[in-house]
Each structure stands twice: as C-alpha cells, then as structure tokens.
Image (cartoon, rainbow, N blue to C red; front, side):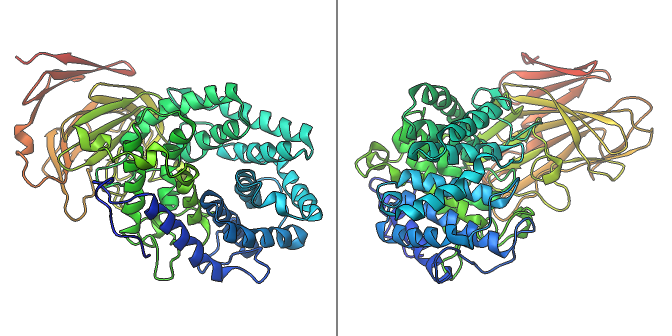
Length: 565
C-alpha cells in the first residue's frame, strides 16, 4: 500500500495524518474493485467461504462492507459504482434477509451507508430502485436476530427506513425493540455484555456503542444521544487503555480479523463530542492501530485485507469468517466523517495511556485488571470475569496482552489433572492492584484465583478445592514472542517445573510472573516476596510500597493493603 511520507510534525508518534487515512481508504477501495461482478452487486474475494454463509452471501458481504468504507470516504465516483450494484442487487441478485441470516448483518451496513450518504447516493437513484431497495431492507425489521449485538442490526435498518418514510411504524418498532434489548445487557460504567452471560470484548465498542450512538446522532435525538453518548464517554476512559504503546489493540475476544475496527469508538467519541480523550490522543490511538496493522502484513500483495491478525492467521477466525469478513475494518474509517479542520485532525498527537505512566486499572463490570508499563508500552489484561466457551481460548484464559496471543499449549492457565478447562467463571471482585474469580475445572473441582500486580510483576495465587488428593496441578504463564521476556517462578506448592499436587483439603499454589519488553530489569525474585499464613491467607510484599494480604473466606476473597513490617 502506497501512503504519503510520514509527517512527524503534527504526528510525532505515528507520522500519520488525515492524508494517510484517505490514502489507505482509497487504496483499499481500488484494490477491491476488480473483484466485483459485472453488475457490481457482489464482491467475490479469493479465499474460503464462511461455514455459516456461502458464495452468494459472502459476495453480498463484500459489497456491504466496502460500501461502508466508500460512505465514510464520501467518494462520489466509488459511490456511483455501489449505486449501480444496489440497483442490480435488489433486482433479484441478493439473497433475502431471513431469521439469523448473514444478509441481516450486511443490511445494517448498507442502511448505515445509505443514511450517511443520502444526497450522494440514495437521492440520485431512480424511484423504482429506491422502492425495491427499501422493500429488500424492510425484511430486516422483522427478521429474528441472534440474541447479541445482532439485535442492533434492525435498529440501523429501521433508522434509515423511518427517515425515508418507508413503513415508518414498523421501522420505529424495530428501533425501539433493538434498543430495549441491549438494556438487558448494559452492566454499568460504559460496559455491555454481548448478549446473555459475561461476554466482554471489542464488540462493546464496534457494535454495542457504535450503532446506538450513530443512530441517535443521525436522528438528531438529543435524549438518546445524552443516554448512549454518556455511556460511550465513560467507556472510552477504559477503552483507551486497551491499546499498547506500539499501537496494538488487546489480543482478546472474537472477530479479531476486523483489526482496526477497534478505532471506531475512538472516532465516534470525537464525532459526537462524547469523549474524555484529548483530540491529539484520539488520533494517536487510532492512527497507531492503523499503522500497527499496515506495517505487519494485514494487506496482501493484491491490496486485500487478509483473514487474520497481522497476516493470514486461521487461529483468530470463527465459523462465520469469510473472505470479505475483514472488511468490517471499514468501521475504523469513521473518522473521515470529521472535516479536515476538526481539531482531532489538526491537534498535535499526544501519548496514549500506555505511553504516559505505569498504571493498574480495575474495570469493575468485566472484573478485569489492566496492567500497563510505560518502559515497554505493554498492556496486560488479567481476566477474572469474561467467558464465552464457544470461543475459547480468546475469552477464558487468565491473561491477555497487546504483545502476545493465546497459544495451543494453554498459556495463562491453571491445569488440573491434565485438563485446562476453565468454565463457570464467577467474578469475586477487582480493586487497586488485584482481581479475583472462581471457576470450575472439568473434574468438578473449584479454583479460586487471585492476581496481585505492581509494575510489570504479577503474583498469581490459586486455591484448589474439591479435588481428589494427589491431583496434579500445573500453572502456565505468558507465551512470549520475539523481543519479549516471559518469566514464571514457583513460590508456593509448585516445583521448578511449575507443577504440584493437591493435598487432603484445600491446597494453595502460588507463582510469580512477569511479561516485559524492557531489556534491563531487576530479578523477579527481588521485586516481590510472598508468605503463607495458614491454609487460606497469603501476604505479598513488594520491594517498594505497601503490600497486600489475601484471605480466602468461605466462597469469597478479601484483599487489603498492609504496611511493610
């Protein structure tokens, strides 16, 4: 991909300006054009088809997701191509929108794009085409979505159809229903779960916040914008901390192949004025993520986004991932709706949270603990509350970071009897420097876990209950890659191989851990010491500052600060 030379004046950290975003959008749009069918209704990219769809549905996906990019770019030449494709698509080419079908997803992108570019695309269509297009979209108003972020797809379609006066009553009903559904999953402090349970990941930003806030903004509904915009603003205070100093988003959750779609809520906050972030910080985080992926092979030699994270990588894919799936990365270009003179484009880049200071941030709704270190820009996520066993290992591991990915050998796990299962995760609290949870192992035993952190150092403690005496226990740490240092040392109940066995009753196992990209660090054992006081009490003493005392009490965990002896 050919981009302009870096400009380190306004962008001292990334070198990227609005011109780089425009050039990237233009290059992506130019690269997909040869893969359009002759009538431009479908875009067939090379690669395997998603198991939930098929060639026709994947072709619609290619149209819809790249149309969204053209809409954010407001490229009238490209939009004319998509207008031609729309006319053909609704004349019998596109599959119908049915219950829980992939076309329901793509209808939301098409409706949003039409809503954003109405004077440039929709208003220029023949009336007969508009009628057919509205009728095709209207099936989304009554199609049953999956009970997750899919509930918002009819909201996007309903918002557009209400605006053009097509089936307005049904459209408003679909909007109201979808917005009511997500209320069931709002857990406070700016966080949603992606449906029932405790599914926390980037869908918070690129779906659960994106669609309601955009709908309220486009509808000019100040009451809705106050509600959803306020939630977005609170969310961004946490969300900004999920980006590493190198621009990488946190490697956790599903649909990671959408890559820099992670930047959408950052831009959305600036677009609607609902953000706690300075303009220069918003651009630094967003540009950092775009640059991170473009520098690491996200685009292949044909200029196409690949199915993967850096380059092609089947490990991050789901059953619904098809060759056009990565183009939901188009959401990341939302910032192009902001005019060139907007302060988010004119301000000088400012460092993101991971670059400013060492920080430990509890995220109460998700029961996560974020741990970042300025010296290496690494952000670590200690997971004591998020679970979706359908997508293990990207939900159920104990830890994730901006510089590592889950390994096939079960990193960041406690393995009982050779089984790494971690299900029925129950959050037990999160606070300044600690997080705790309980989970079930396959054997039926319960593990009550606590992590205590300072700087880059971690103390990981596991109280195993209900296991047969002599059950093997193994603790694993970070799966570090090139340029990283991962350490895991036994402290209590573990041998040098990080293995141990359970006793007659509850058995405590403790390890010291560290993941760092810093070259010169003090020995891990000199930075922290641990002491066991009885079967259910652990004292952690840092080399500097107050320590922490952990007590396992009944079914819970109590953590308190203690002064040094």
